[in-house]
Length: 137
Image (cartoon, rainbow, N blue to C red; front, side):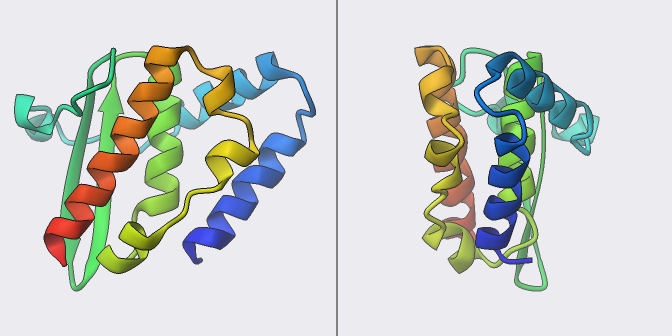
C-alpha cells in the first residue's frame, strides 16, 4: 500500500467514530497496544525522540532500500500516536517517507484534540522519522 492509501484507511477508521473523541482516544490506545514493540536492546537514550513529554523510542533500519520503523512509548496515548506513524511510514522508501504530506493528521483532527505537549511530541515524531529516512537516502 502507498502512504496515501494507508492515510485514507486511517481517516475512514476515525470517521466511524464521528465526533466522539473519547471513542477516538480508545481507538488510538488500541492501536498502541497492537504496536510491534522495539527490541529491548534498541531502548537506548540515543533512540529517544527529543521533544516528546513521555519517553518514545524509535528504531529505524534500511533493508534493501526500504525503511522499517519499530517503536515504543511509556504513555498509552503517545504509544498510539507513534503506532499510527509507524503504520503510515514504515515499509516505504526513504524518498516516499520524506515526501509524505501526512494530511491525515489534520483531517482526523488529531493535533487539535491533543494537549499542546502531545501535539509537539507528534511533530517531533514525524520530524525524527523523516530525518532518519533522509539519512538513508
